[in-house]
Length: 169
Image (cartoon, rainbow, N blue to C red; front, side, top):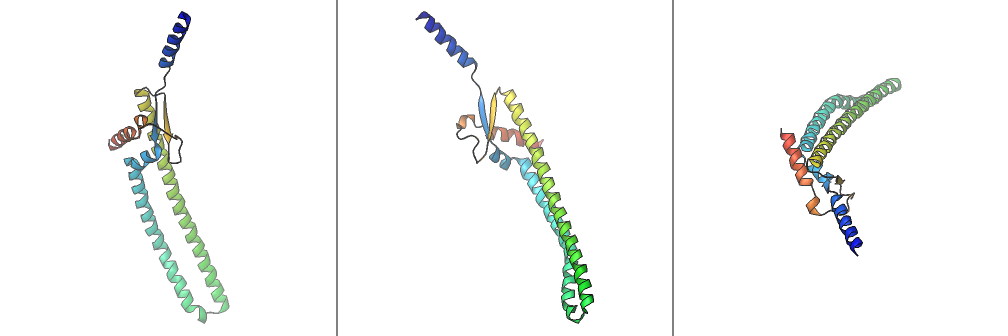
């Protein structure tokens, strides 16, 4: 009986010494409310609008050429019509290629921005975990990596406050 008590006390002490400190962060909420994310999205929106205006200024003369062609097409010879149609088709292809370049450029900027934000978030979470002696901080999203988490270990607001304060600096 005495051995059982010693074993029980040893087991309780061992268990209490190895308790892990765990928390989780709602990544979707964090990124949605992070000021740097909002700023990046606003900047991308401005660039998208600017590029759209640039593209519109490039495509407007083409549209005028197409309208002019349709007005004159009935009076043109078959060879002249075919040559003009080929010229317009090449110009349309060039415009489509330019539009794809614009879209790819925006996608790359968005991807680079997200990667940069993710690195910042990961760094802040790591620093917070080390400073507050967490063994594990999980990330969750609406699709559910963490199926349940007590609000006491939800660090989303805390990490968000740190991120936004860091961004303001």
